Each structure stands twice: as C-alpha cells, then as structure tokens.
Length: 472
Ligand code: ADP
Ligand code: F6P
Image 1 (cartoon, rainbow, N blue to C red):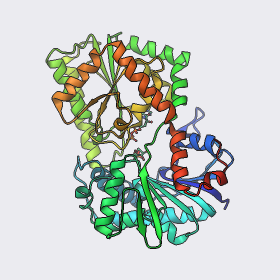
Image 2: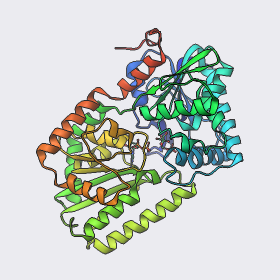
Image 3: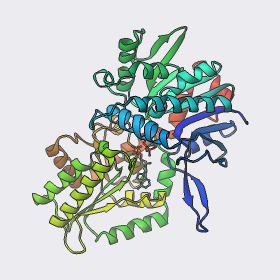
C-alpha cells in the first residue's frame, strides 16, 4: 500500500461516475474545488483522498485525479441505509439545521455509524505515512478523529464541519451526544464555518464532558484541542474565467431568448432539500404574482432543484410538495408558452451552470439554514461585469461574508416578498457597488485561501506546510 503525507477524508470521493459515449463507465472530477485547491497548494505532496465511491458494491480501484490518489471505502446496502441515509441524513442533518424537520433516533443507525466510522479510520491508518496530516471532513465522520488517534497517535488530525453546529438546546436531544463530542476531540483542530458554531461546540464540551473549554481551546487529557471558524469557499478564478468565456456568454444569450426574453430573470439553484427554503420561496413568488406585483410576461423564475437523498422519506415528501406547488402556480399564472416557473431537476455541467448564473438578474438563495451555501458564492464569482442582485438568507453561512447582498429572513413571508421586490427594482449603481464589494471579497477568500488558513492553523509550529512543500 502506497502511503501519503497528506490524507483528506470525506464521506464521498471527489469524483462522479459517468457513462462515456461508447457506453463505458468512467470517473471524472466532481466540482467543489478542494482537489484543485490542494493541487495548486501542495502539488508535490503525495496526497490520498479516502471516501465512498457511491453504490453498494465492492470498493473500485480508481485512477489518480489531478495527482491525488483515490482510496475508496465500501458501503454495503445496510451501511447505506443506516449510516448514510439514517444516522447522517435523518438524524444529524435535520438536528444540525435547526430541526426544521424532526430528527429520527434509532439504535440500529448508531451501530452502523460506529461501524462505518471505524472502517474509515482503519482505511486512513493504512494509507497515512508516519506523522502524516489527516484532514477529516463533515458530519458523516464525527467519530473518525477519536478512533484514528487510538490507532495512530503519531498523526496530525484535523476535523472540519461543513454544516452548521447547533446550539446546546438542540444538540442535547442526541442520545449519543457524549460519544460524538469525544470523537471530534480526537482531532488537534476542530474547524467550523462560523464562530457561533465553535462557541456552541465549546459550550457543549464543557456541559456534557465537563472539560475546561473556551471558544479557542479545549484541554483533553494531556492534549490541547484548538477550535475556530474557517469559512469555506470556491475556486473563484475558475468560475470567473468560465463565466467570461465567449461560448458561455452565447449560451446565456440563447437561454434568455428561450425564456421568452423577459425583462428580468430570477434564478434559484438548490439540492432538493427542506433546508433550502424552496417551498417558502415559491409561496412568496406566487403571492407576488397573485398581488400583481410581478407579471409573468416581464419576469420569470427559473428553479433548479436536483433530487437528493431520494430514499429518505422527508426528501420524497418535499419533492412531491414542491412539484405540486410548481404545477399549481404554472396552472394558475402561466400562459401557453409562458410558464411562471421554469422548473428543472437535471444536473448541469459547469459551463451550463455559469451561463445560468450569467442570465440571472436576481439570484434567490434563501435557505432556512445552511452551513455556507456555495451557490451564492458561485453566482457572485460569475458576475464578471459587476451586475446582478444576490438575495441571500441571513441563515446561510455565506451571509456573514457577503453582507452586501440583499439579506432576508426566509421565515418571514412578507419580508421575503419585499426582499424579492427590492432586488428586482434595485438601480444599477446600488447593484454594481454591492457586487463589486462581494467579488473583491471572494477574490481574496477563495478555496485556496481556505485550505491554506486551515492547514496553517493545524500547524501551530509553522513547520507542517513547509514540510508538505506548500507553494506561497
Ligand atoms: P449543498 O452542499 O447543501 O448541496 P451548496 O450550495 O453549498 O449546497 O453546494 C452545492 C453545489 O452543487 C454547488 O457547487 C453547485 O454548483 C452544485 N450544483 C447545484 N445544483 C446543480 C446542478 N443542477 N447541476 C450541477 N451542479 C449543481
Ligand atoms: O454540504 C453538505 C453535504 O452533505 C456535502 O458533504 C455533500 O457534498 C452535499 O451536502 C451533498 O450531499 P450528499 O453527499 O448526501 O449527496
């Protein structure tokens, strides 16, 4: 087994399987940017990514992606049901998102969660060289830092949570709360999207485990675990370059024409998830149509909602409700050849997505709760001519950075309607000033800066990045 000095660990490998024109199955890099960020930052560091390749078959052998080795961890049908769909996405996911849907607690799910976390820890222990840096991502793998430390005390272990970390009054519901917190404390550095999440974590550790904790440091046995906020970002330059391509500009022009050349296009791009506020947004739009504030001929809404976690009951119910509502709104307000909502559930390639961002005069990103929301950042990066209004939920992590967006509370229907109208009616000077400021922020704070700031924080002594051969 080849070993690496940097090991990135996530539930999923950063690749998608796709069917080539000749019918063969091939793997390609999925968007998200972390692989390319690590590649530019640490191009000479032997790096392995450990994760699930999807499906329930044996772990496939995979080729390297941008110089990063892919090490797959297999899940069987029971693991998929109880670890991924169960404990990760029907217990932790709703609990961490303000319990906007009721979290479910089942002892069998917890057993699967422990089992799969143990399998990941063992896979990492095999591929990490002595003294390697291991960077564990997200809520599917809370126990991995603790389990890994037992197997390999020589490693430098980081943990980063991409989703919100809830306040104590919510987290305290979790039957196995102490085990989860202890698992995270196996890391040397625990990172969150926002300072509030780090604060919640410190409070919980003090309360549940009775350990001395501040928002920056926690003493555990003979070690100190550091905690902090590291807001994740995107490959800003890559999205900007894509959006500026002449063929993408052409696609955007064609799209506007195909949409009936309306005065204004509102766009939303979400995973089909109850945290994204899709139903609330549709209601606001429908009331604006009913009140005559918005006319179908002048303004269209494009709602992209890619199905997600389709075997989880709450996701099936949401999809049915959204599709019924889209049908109702189109039936009531659309005309022949002029739907009120263009509803799309397909995945798009990056160029098509960039063209959609270019065509959107208003981008409505209104989740009820979101760790960050990369779509909001991608939209800003794609508006290379400093036009376009971003309507953004106060409850998205991105709102802490993109404070020049038109901010709304998506739970407040009247506020949401008003926010949409304000964004639609904003003058070019206001829109331009806001967009310029947000683009400047993302230019500095891209995914490369995120990876660098996390890894340097993991490396208090300052020698780690140097040892890994980071470029400046
Ligand atoms: P989440 O991680 O909850 O899905 P984010 O907004 O943070 O939400 O990230 C979603 C990612 O998925 C973005 O990079 C976005 O570009 C991508 N994405 C969303 N919808 C589509 C789609 N229809 N086709 C391709 N990529 C999509
Ligand atoms: O942002 C949270 C997250 O779970 C990511 O880890 C993941 O890439 C995305 O949502 C999509 O979810 P899933 O892996 O369940 O399809």
